[in-house]
Length: 57
Image: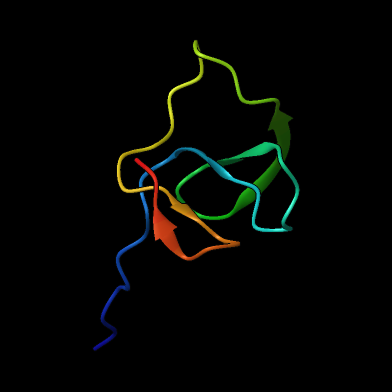
């Protein structure tokens, strides 16, 4: 029996590559979609800044 590991919900998260951009997580993996931070883009609930390891949403 295999136990599934829970994944973070799909949404915008700080780019794990350490850039100042946001990257789209589709629920299974990182995509190539990136955006500048701006008010109309909401971070995913519980998003963590990968540089500081702190929750920002």
